[in-house]
Image (cartoon, rainbow, N blue to C red; front, side):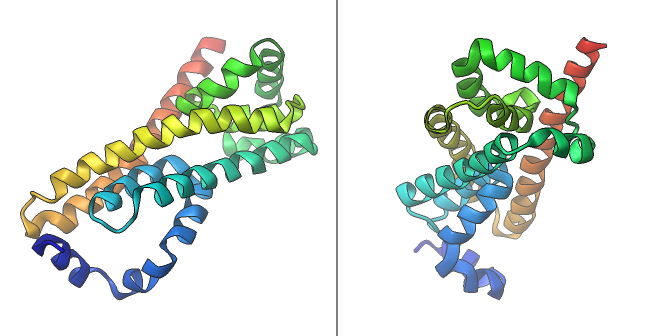
Length: 206
């Protein structure tokens, strides 16, 4: 283990060290909640030697696909009442769902694949739910998502891994600050991109 790695391990909060034996389980759960952010951060920790490549890769894919399956089920088993009641909290309207459903009947395969590698252009959640509403065969839904997920996971892990290279050459006194900044920037970037795309779509429809 390098001197920098050893310093990182020594300086890590005790609760993080306690979680290390459960790192793949924790990664799976976090990927369900916020896949893209966790994939990017996981690439960083892969570089630091806390994970093995393939177990991490497959865990991240499984977590994000599990989330896809959950949102598909929401759509399949009656999304319209839920959209009417809670949609406003996720910027989802019945009108948007109906438009997406109409598009699904024409371009099902393209939408499933491209939405996975583009975060749904800011409407990933709507697309996942609408796939269930449109009764897209689940095996087909999962297969297309898995193919897109394979490339998307690798891309985001690469971003985090690249930052890991930079982290290892930064002065040790700045490493903690740079790590915190990295996590904040990644989360803010995904939030900002999603918000921007939704705003542009809203302007286009007005």
